[in-house]
Amino acid sequence: MFIHDCLGVNSAGHLTIGGCDTIELAAEFGTPAYIMDEATIRARCTAYRNTLRECFGEGSMAHYAGKALSMRRIYDIVGEEGLGIDVVSSGELYTALAAGFPVERICFHGNNKTDADIEYAVKNRVGRFAADNREELDAISRIAGKAGITQKIILRITPGIDPHTHKAITTGDIDSKFGSPIATGQAEEIVKYAISLPNIALCGLHCHIGSQIFDVQPFAGAARIMLKFIADMEAKTGWLADELDLGGGFGVRYVKEDKGIDIASAIRELAGVINAECTELGIQRPRIMLEPGRSIVADAGITLYTVGSVKTIPGFRTYVSVDGGMPDNPRYALYQSRYEAVIANRAAEPKTIHCTIAGRCCESGDLIGENMPLQETSRGDILAVFVTGAYNYSMASNYNRLTRPPIIMVKDGKSYTAVRRESFEDLTRNDL
Ligand code: LLP
Image 1 (tube, rainbow, N blue to C red):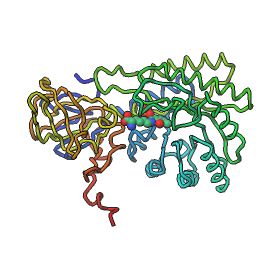
Image 2 (image 1 turned 60 degrees about the vertical axis):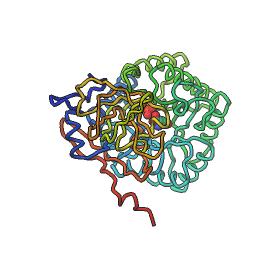
Image 3 (image 1 turned 90 degrees about the vertical axis):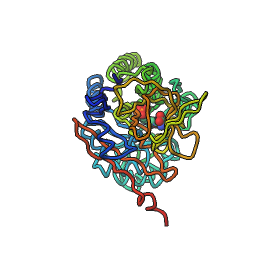
Image 4 (image 1 turned 90 degrees about the horizontal axis):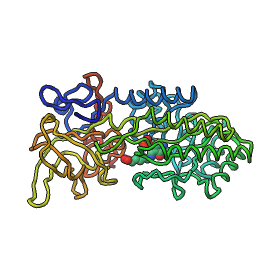
């Protein structure tokens, strides 16, 4: 009935997730609430871990990109599943450390790490930095030197690949705030510069071409370009890349029309391309890293809201207003992202209306979606929006002084709170 395995409908006609009745969850935890299925997250981790191992052996691994969803519990889960993580701020690093995540499996990313970020990460002996630019290399070298260590780094390179996704989430193109382009010669310069610096060990290269990508081709194209560049650098400098990180970006199915990408088959296809290219170039295959965020957590999550009003403007449209909106899910406002939704207490009934789902903020752009098929609904119904596990909680705000929803995890028919609902005291905690 649904495109996501963790969802179902029970004998009461209620939507279920991970074997739990969503109406009971809404009654127990209130709305809005993010609900996440632990088994789905673990299954995605397993697919990455096992397929990378099968294709590339030990040492190749996935680093979960915490920007998709950062909270202590997710770091416990991905850590137990044997993945590494990518953090992009001291705040994400702090959260991972608070969860006891193994530091050697942490890579610190971002295009503008401050000295304070670098000092904090070096002090905590973070495994790697993905260094972006010269200024950052200087700072890492200086701070690592002061700490008396040699800091492992990888370098962010832009291969010049356009993955045909939304332009706000394309990052591997030449004109990008991230990394050094190969085409302009800046990548070669920065590799040589990194090798020349003290207190830094350059272990490999990194690229990330974009997000929500369904085709293997752009990844294969990026891998080919990066491997050629690795071979070129080896010939010119004698430096051997031990590691090639191809970033994240595997897409997920938000709506039926999205074609999806199967993690295991995509990695296998990519491995074929990488192995052939290494043979052709006569280089030793580096360890291969991936950095999935969305494809680990997105379809494990749904958001539950309570319907407040239903307003039909004749000749125009029907607005269904809910008790959350852009503060808990800014993705429609930012990217016109599409979602599917159901009235959770009537999940077995056919969808007979098309509506605009509106949030409760004082802003007309505060929508969850437009022209969405839905069951007939009225005040008090529970609305479930699917595939909200990634880039929802992590991008949430307190706009209009709304409190951020809790994250409730479900597992085998049982539920537990991973993040509690913010309180009014939380809202004023920093007000002096
Ligand atoms: N690695 C790097 C360096 C990244 O910049 C990203 C995402 C990832 C990995 C993970 O990519 P994923 O597997 O999640 O596609 N807020 C946007 C998505 C921004 C993605 C930014 N970078 C959204 O809601 O669609």
